[in-house]
Length: 135
Image 1: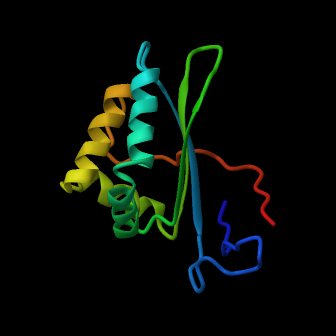
Image 2 (image 1 turned 90 degrees about the vertical axis):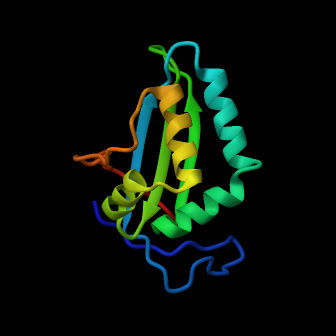
């Protein structure tokens, strides 16, 4: 699904004038058994002391929005992500190949809690977005 929109603040102020978000992705990764506390610590560090490094990485990759959450489920906890960028495939390829210190830290920590290897870009769409509302 291709969707083009510009983000707006409730006051009507445009947050990203001239920037179109053309691709969105959602994905969920199962958290390894016993690793939910480590996943929370990872996200807390991402939102806290590493927030500026995260922002620098996202800007370099062209990612304009990214949200991470933990979702409890009957089969175990999931690490859920939403992101948007003008070219997600390019962003994933750059991130997978990146040797940047922060990117390496991110990939290592995510791998420790989910077993996912983000050094390999996905070959298929992360999700099939079937409904998307925004005001």
